[in-house]
Length: 317
Image (cartoon, rainbow, N blue to C red; front, top):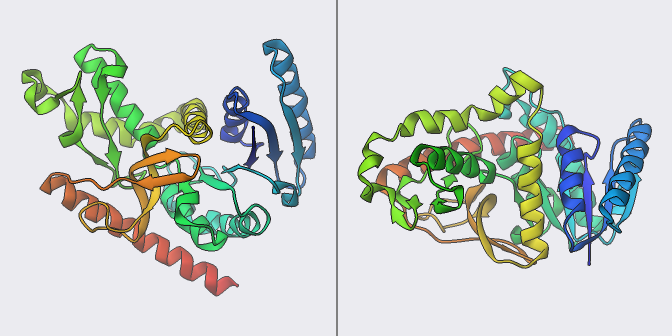
């Protein structure tokens, strides 16, 4: 029995996330929040969802509002509000503009729904997760972002296709920034439980090409259809199901790390984390030397952008 709130519900990702979340049995109440001026869209979405619930035989308490005070009692708050990335933009181009909005939302969540888990979707997601953590005042376990979960799934699909195996046989992770400095963990990649380095055909794997494909996937989709929708929406559904089902799955999300990865941390960034009803708990890991260097570079990149955004928000206050 849980209440899930989506802030930014009128955007492409917010709409489809509402669709995926509405199908999770643990969810009994779904609240759609949009900004003032979007009331007609929110009402239209609500009516459309009720039609879909009738078709599926789903009984769910659904409401919409532009008033964040209605957050009260939320178990999970999904934040997808903000300026979406346009073709030719990097995620980090949005950092300050979205950071200012996210800081306001986070303050409200911390004040109105202090027991909630914040799931950050707004880009640049690592920086926005840090902003949400600082300004909400919530515990680190309660605030995490989509991070490199979707990137990891994209790489997983490419590897499965290359080796012509079912996607469930592939286990791999991308850590670090959800962006240019992402780090694939080939040292932790297995197929059918066998480390890829022990598979003779791995020598011919176009690894760099695959990672570049993942790195530019969002940009390519945006150029063709204007936004990434279904991939992020399904990934959000997976995370919500994992939280509310208390599944203790280890997924790669943007979470606050201290010393879990070779003592590199004090930043919100994509790392493996055990996820359950209490939030996200980064898992201590050891990786190869070349991966350590790449992860350190990714951390410093995100730290610098986060510090700049914090300074600009504070100057504006």
